[in-house]
Image (cartoon, rainbow, N blue to C red; front, top):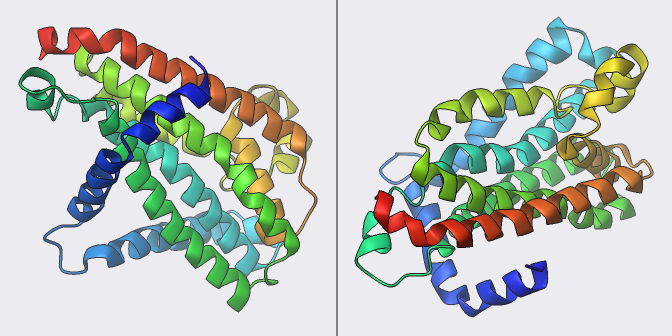
Length: 267
């Protein structure tokens, strides 16, 4: 199934997607005193911890300024959180709504989409903080920032595909939720959030032979080039990320559609 066909089908259900996305955002921190502020505080606290550990203790700041290093980590974490939230939340999306499966006629593909769009909303809030940091303590915003949406789009496509795939498989294999945490941890350290690809290529080229197949590492590296370092973008890695993202996007939707008729029997 082609991506344009999938997007067209989702566009027809845009009103329903918007309602569930809004609900997911509102429920995220419902009942907490700080509410939406946690969307800012959580990533800031993570950035502070990782900057001290990897930047100060392990010497990551020796090759760049402390502010640049902190912004680089924050941007990497912001992009990674899209995939992390997808892996940790979507396996239970269909299981948590059995009435939609059994008692009403409902387009179930909307549920994973709304989950990812809520994560995209959180991503945009953190991205605003990145821009504020660039203006306050960084080198400002260059014309290369216009390329950022093109650079990060493959990860959004991959998140949608993974959401459909994991939410459908989560109906049949509940253990997926148990391995979500360790899997996210492995992906985080394999995505170049705390180091540059040049460091890996220079000191551990044998490891790069495996890491180069992770699309996240290319997107995070080139996102830093476009936003923070004001460096040229290496489009070969981004083209690979697009191919990977489109493949996962189509494969995830295809698997969801094939398994959807069986959901009612399992739930």
